Length: 229
Image 1 (spheres, rainbow, N blue to C red):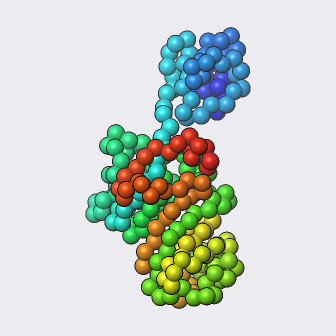
Image 2 (image 1 turned 30 degrees about the horizontal axis):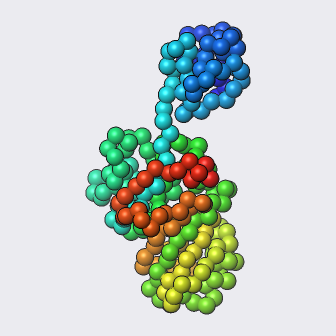
Image 3 (image 1 turned 60 degrees about the horizontal axis):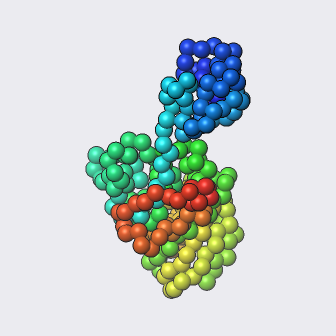
């Protein structure tokens, strides 16, 4: 939103008066005087008018090492949710950027920045998501080429984007996908006649789960991490 429109919306001043107040130096943005009425601000800009605080909200970005058995939800009457693993004061503020099903473990991102979470998860942005996959049956030699060509998902009537499969063992691989469709990895393996028995997300884009972050633990993202999305 433009700064002058924000002042108009959050005070009793007219749009014309709001422009004059900004231009004459009455408004501060993030601790500095702002004189351009057309300056763009967001939900996390701190705005003051003649010393009166109009907006102040801190942006939060967390990585969580999700353990099995927790739902990627804000609340549930039957099962524990991932938000219960975070500090209580933050729980009402956060939402999940890229869900994992209850049995899946690994990297989960939580934030109160809706624009950021949309950048991370929007299919058109093709954010690479890397999973360590364990299967019930040996992974076929053809699996790599099948996933590279794309797998037809009948429910949506779409072909997946090319995915990279790196074999790590007879029943283990590292898989990189570029979408986040419902149960996508499990459905891709089911399409080639195999079953996923364990699924662990290692990274999303440049944000990688640290091996030292224990299951159920979380930490704030570094500035470099959240700016990479």
